[in-house]
Image 1 (cartoon, rainbow, N blue to C red):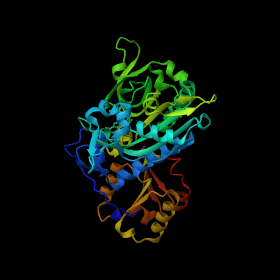
Image 2: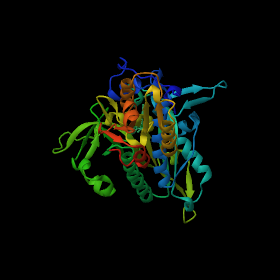
Image 3: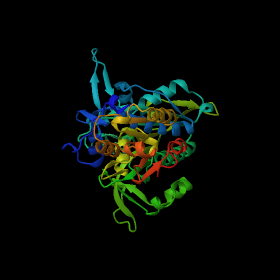
Image 4: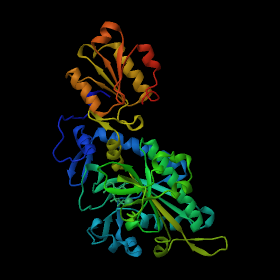
Length: 424
Ligand code: ATP
Ligand code: MG
């Protein structure tokens, strides 16, 4: 990718509308543009990050045999009337009437539609458990959309749904998703804190949120300090849940020796048993040939919110510092005007593009200083500089965005250099 072919604008100053750092940086790097309150256009740079986050989530869901499908954004109101949520959901739900006066809605979540679909396809206990997910846009008419993509009205969610024969196997499923979420968020470069949570409009009696610490986070969380210091993935679900944790209304204010802070909710999982299967009549035949209600859970990740959350966790005074795996470009090659047509530089660019895919060559006719500033602002992990120094000594300069270290490197060494492993 050549910078001159890429649609990107970088701004020196933060637009006034942005209050928090992630929103400021997303606007300054033109990752997104607001179309209307809480509804965004994802520009090429932002979309690259969104897709990378999706891919990591997708891989992790597939790992636990959760199968991807794609449900529509527009749903029929009929099923929501059956579950009782058409009235309960209130003003957050965008209700629509088509030309025949049929009531539709823009899905804020998908429990009804998947329960109904699943019931048509799976009839026997022999086919359980089953897990399904999709990554689809949601609409919630939030009263105060704010902080950019953090609290949008239209936002991208990964939502998974599980179907089990009994409460006990459904609990095993819940634990699988819980551990899978920890792993997913860690792979995204975050430090998740799992906290016991209020199930809210989704319902049920067992629920956890996954929170990322940030002073601008909208949730209040309280937890045992061991929840962050211990290596979560080395522990079992039971060990993790022996430690105190809670969010918002569940917090016990009289509790001593706990850490209280603010968090960004990036994931939320629910066990709700037969709350939807009962009213929607979703049953399977059990071992004794009798009909049984399905035991269900649902598991959400705020994919578009994660873009903001990752920036909140990874930035400095110069701009964004993307973790390698979600960076929109891994390597930026900055060349001076006189080297733009240089075959050796073009060969390096082709070689690295083959190997790392997301490589950009800054061929804009602007100053070196501005190119370096932009690379730092956008947060590209590695910047290769080919300018005067290269012409004089044959060595390139390699800049690490995280450590700010400059390294002089020969062409041969550059070809062998592992950009992913060495980034820290
Ligand atoms: P919140 O408490 O932040 O309003 P929620 O509890 O209503 O979220 P869930 O129903 O749990 O949201 O949705 C699953 C995930 O979707 C959330 O954990 C969050 O990461 C994301 N999400 C929810 N609402 C929004 C929104 N308005 N904008 C962006 N992401 C959102
Ligand atoms: Mg929630």
